[in-house]
Amino acid sequence: MLSLLRPLLATCVYLLLLLPGGQCRIPAYSNGFHYQDISNGNGNGEIYFNGVRLHVESPQLAVSATRGSSVTLPCHYHYEPELATPRRTRVKWSWLPANVIGEAVSPATSARETEVMVAMGNRHRSYGNFRGRVRLRRSAPGDMSLVINELQLNDTGRYRCEVIDGLEDESVTVELELQGVVFPYHSQEGRYQFNFFGAQQACQDQDATLATFEQLFTAWEEGLDWCNAGWLADGTVQYPITDPRAGCGGMNFAPGLRSYGQRHRLLHHFDAFCFTASVKGNVYFLKHPTRLNFTEAVQACVSDGSQIAKVGQLYAAWRLMGLDRCDAGWLADRSVRYPITRPRANCGPPEPGVRSFGFRPPYLKFGVYCYR
Ligand SMILES: *[C@@H]1O[C@H](CO)[C@@H](O)[C@H](O)[C@H]1NC(C)=O
Ligand SMILES: *[C@@H]1O[C@H](CO)[C@@H](O)[C@H](O)[C@H]1NC(C)=O
Image 1 (tube, rainbow, N blue to C red):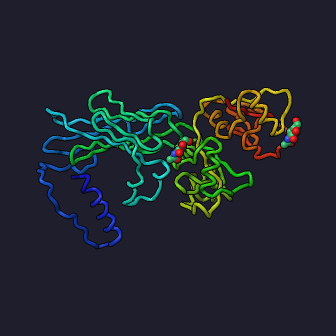
Image 2: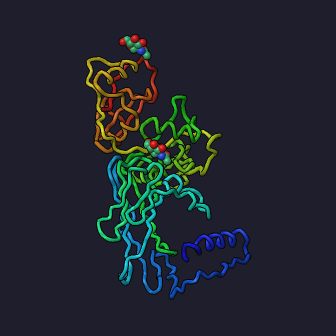
Image 3: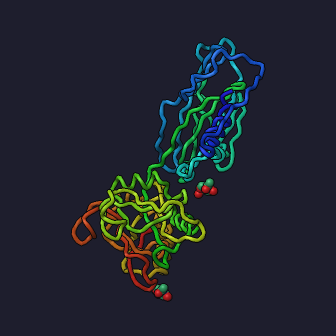
């Protein structure tokens, strides 16, 4: 019954907002069941059904994991009092991707949720990009925890575990985050050349994905300060400022994320904020007797049984594996950079970071970072 009421309530609230002073009535109906007490209405994931209460719970409302690993999103249900005969329940896991969480909330928002898995008894079905990667843990009666294997960068977001029992349903949500690093990225043609789709592609080409608002916010909390605006996964354009100054949104604003809001995804052009997480392989500075032009650098990595590293791979190695090397090297996008975790003289500014010389003409000679 609650599940039937919710969309109606949402529509009513919406109409009330649109039509101040307007009336909104929820139509009466009867489905032939008698409910002693239909709901406590407090959204705790509890309902009352003929005096029996269905609880759906998760001991962890947020879970943090690493890319490529397996993660368990906990969800359990039980009845109070316990049932003498088991009821037929259906479990549905759905997902609100991190890139749409930040978008405007409207009655249609729930339509952006996509199905991950539906299970009834021992039968189950998984969907889309999750097919073959998910299962229910079922370590005890009522354990409907979702196990996701081979975590990908874009699996982050809000997962909903919904237990459906006859006409009733209750759910909890669990947030999934990945441990990783955010980096700003611009085109070889210069600053502010990417529309939204170009930014998406550019991050992907560097073994990354567009950062979410939460990821950029965390990076800002950890000290990221960048005075060029970049696309985020939700289609907004923002930049993080820890040290307010003229020319970067002004000195009169507190430190924080400066936002241009939603921009036109085709027509407007900015840089990108990319997010990447740990890589399985190894990023290393190639030992080579001479410095190399770009073509030689690409070839030297291949001869060493690897590939020239992408920008995202270098950032992940710097941030998550502590890679520290005071030698400038070519990367796959024809930029030249080096990673510093222990700042020292002649190795750039006093803070740790990936130092960049930007894109360089291919005939110039540097070292090279490879990935295997
Ligand atoms: C998520 O990333 C995977 C692997 O990079 C890709 O195949 C898939 O299409 C992406 N899914 C979405 C919804 O972007
Ligand atoms: C790099 O050097 C090789 C010779 O070792 C040369 O053939 C090639 O044209 C050079 N590439 C560039 C981009 O300068």
